[in-house]
Each structure stands twice: as C-alpha cells, then as structure tokens.
Image 1 (cartoon, rainbow over the protein chains, first blue to last red):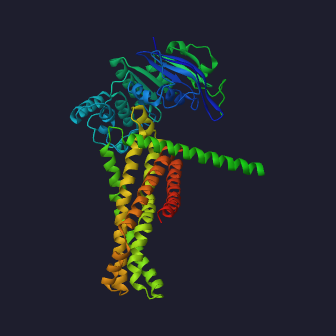
Image 2 (image 1 turned 90 degrees about the vertical axis):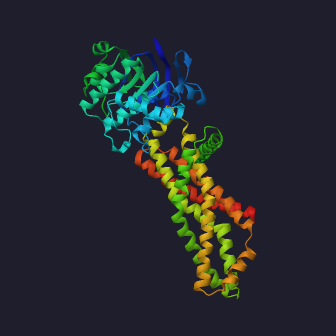
Image 3 (image 1 turned 180 degrees about the horizontal axis):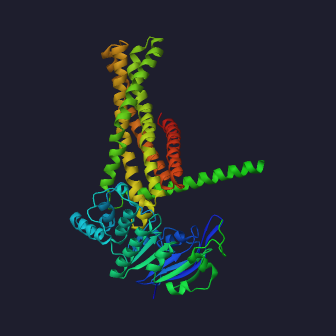
Amino acid sequence: MGMIKISNLKKFFGTKRVLDGVDLEIDKGKITVIIGRSGEGKSVLIKHIIGLLRPDDGQIFLEGQEISSMSERDWGEVRKRFGMLFQGAALFDSMTVGENVGFPLKEHTDLADEDIMKIVGDKLRRVGLVGVEHMMPAELSGGMKKRVGLARAIVMDPEIVLFDEPTTGLDPIMSDSIADLVLDTQRSLQTTYILITHDIPFTYKIADKIAMLHEGRIIEQGTVEEMKNNPNPVVKQFLEGRAEGPIKVY
Amino acid sequence: MIRAYLEKLGRMAEKFVDTAGLMSIMLFQAAVHAFTPPIKFRNIFKQMEFVGVQSLFVVILTGSFTGMVLALQSFNALKRFGAESLVGPTVALSMARELGPVLTGLMVTGRAGSAMATELGTMRVTEQIDALVTMAVNPVKYLVVPRVIAGVLMFPLLAIITDFVGVLGGYFVGVKLLGINPGVYIGRTIDFVQVSDIFAGLYKSIVFGLITTLVASYNGFYAYGGAEGVGRAATNSVVTASVMILVSDYLMSSFMV
C-alpha cells in the first residue's frame, strides 16, 4: 500500500531543471531506496518529502492527504510523523550527544529530564552506543555521528524515517554496520524508511524496493532481484559501476 | 556597455529588494514568535550572557578611552574661549547622546554580531537549521528570537556602562591630569546634562541592538556555499549592521534634537 505518493513532481533552481516529473509510491512499513548519480537531485527529492523544499509543480500525498501545498503551520504537525538522518548527521554542535538525541522529546513532550535521558539511553543502545551521552559531537567519529543522528531521528518513534546518504564518507565495514542498524531498527517497529544513496552493496542489503532517479525522473523501480535483472542499460551501467555506457561522465 | 551597466544596476536593485523583503519577513516572524508561548527563557538568557556579559570588557575599554580623549580634545578647544569648566558637560553629553550608544553598537556588532552570523551560518551549511525544521521546531523562534531579544535588552545596558565609564575617564583626565576643579567639573555636568539626554541615547541603543542581531541572524540564516559562505555572512553582517547603525543614528538624532 502506498503510504506516500509523489506525482509529477517538478523543481527548478533558476533555469536548471532538477526534478522533471517524478512519480513514485513509497510502501508503508518497507525500505525504499532511491539511487542515482551525485547531483541528480536525490537530496532535492527527499527534501520535498519532508517539506524543506516546495515543488514548482506536482503533488506529494501522505496517506491520501496532499502535503506539498500545506502551510508551514500545518507542516509542523505533519513533520512530527517524520524523522530524518542528514548526510553529515547535522548534530547540534553546541549540545552534548544526550541533549541532541533528547532534543525532539524536550521540544514536543512534557517528559521529565530523567525520563528523557532514559529514552535517550535506550535509543543510543539501539544504535550500538553506550555511555556517550556526555560527549560533544566534535569528539565523535563519522560513523558514531551517523549513529547518534539515527538515534535522534527515531527518538520520537516516527512513522517515516528519511536518510540522506547514510553511508557517505564511511568505510565499507562501518557502512555494513549502518545497514544492519537500518534493518534492525526498521524491522522491529515496521517503520517506513526512505533512503537515498549511491552505495550499491548497501542498497542490495537493505532495500525492499529500489527506484532509480535519472535526469530528473524515476526511470525504473523494483525489488533488488528485479533491478539486478533490469535490461535498461542506464540501470545496468549504474548498478555495475561502469564508466562506459549511456550515462556520460563529465 | 550601457546595457551591461544597467543590467548590473538592475541585479543590485533586485538583490536589495530581496534582502529587504526577507529581513522584514524575519523581523515580523520574530516579533510574532517572541510573544507566542512557549517562550525559551533558557535560550534568551544564554544569548543575553553572550551579547551582554561577554561584551563588558570591550565596552569598558572603549568607553573609558573615548571619555578620556574627549576630555583632552574638548579641553584644548574650550581653553581658547576660557570655557574649560564646560569640559565635564561636553564629555557627558557627547557620551550619553551619541558616542555611548554608537560606539557600543559598533563594538558589539564587531564582537557579537560577527560571531552570531558565523554560528548561524555554520548551522545552515551543516544542515543543522534544516534538522530543526524536520524536528518540527521553528528555527526563527528557536534561533533568531532569543538573539534579537538579547540585543534589544543588552545594548542599552551596555550603552549605560559605556556612558558611565566614559564620564569617569573624562573626569580622570579633566580633573586629575588637566587640573580642572572637581567641584566645577561635577557641578557643571549636573547643570547641563538632563535625564532626557541619557534616554535619547538609550532609545538609539535599542534600535542598534535590533539592527545588529537581526542583520547577523539574517546573514547567518541565509548563508550558502560552505566555509567561504560563512565567512561572507560574517563580513556582510558587520559591514551592513555598522552602516545601518551610523545611518539610523543620524536619522534618529535629527528627529530627537
């Protein structure tokens, strides 16, 4: 069942056409991975889903309700159903790890500080971190920052979590451990996960559905097996990581 | 040639209108959110400490030396008319009406305004402001409102301190170094300086506090382009706020005379 439906989404930056009619359905309780080359507008697409950017044309529906034309005030409520992990984790560098993870709870609930810290500890354990609550983000490695970012994204138990390139800048082993975390946190709560990445091994490991964004549109989509067997030369070239093919390297 | 010039002029005008519009919207949003609960007292106090307490040293240094040099220069000038006794009121009036608020404004813009623009600019380019939005937290309420409130409250307090140490500096130079009679110095100052003179300066300070924090917040908030963009935001905020302080000072003075 489509939880999020994106219909004919278009976005221009100046005269540059970034999204040229994206059509995509995101299934509830599944992991959808959007792949594509760097600069193809994957981040732009994901930022539309959570209302950080507004489309020039087209609509986005969340469970049948159009969210793309909502006022900023209405978005406030809708966003509470989302969590997001940013590419650089986007932790607040003036706060400790514990304050970062507990921030949404502090802002949106009446929980006492001790209760917040208990939930924070739980979520940090879920992402494999113990005893880091009092550390500052600057003291963490890239992989740890992503884990803390993930803990913060899921601290409110959101229905949908968005991931902006969760493995960029990480070594292959750390990427694999992030994949395990994604699977572990998603399976236990049956949350809807939407990821954008160009990390193919990572994608194969976690995806229920893969959609490929190319030249501003979703050109192909399907399960991992379907995409591996997809005859489209663009998809083949990308998944196999070849410089030669229909996609030109500039 | 002419066309290129006109196009450039047009782009500059467009940018100016764009900036003025976005800044006005930010001011309006900040004004609305400032009075909408929940009010973030912790953030406000933190910014007050940053803008106010941490600026004390630079403000005291500026105020005292300005008062001292004012006494020295006005003594030289007034001596020619045999009016050395007016050094006290000259220093006090100049400090209270003009130099206290303006110098405080410029110094705190250099210190706190640039830091604010840098902090918010870094938050923008590292997606921390986007992260706030995704967590359903209004970034203007969370980041801009505390800074603007801190500026509006702390600038007048800092200006009073500048006035006070300026007058003390003037007294030290006039009485201790130049030999003016202390009774005459203090008496004449009290005779000439009125409470309205001090308030005239404080009103200006409130406006300067608003200008500095709003301009810094705006530049940081809309920073783009990595480290270079953050640097540009800091520079622009100091230059723009300083110019706006000087221009608005003249306009306000012309109305208050």
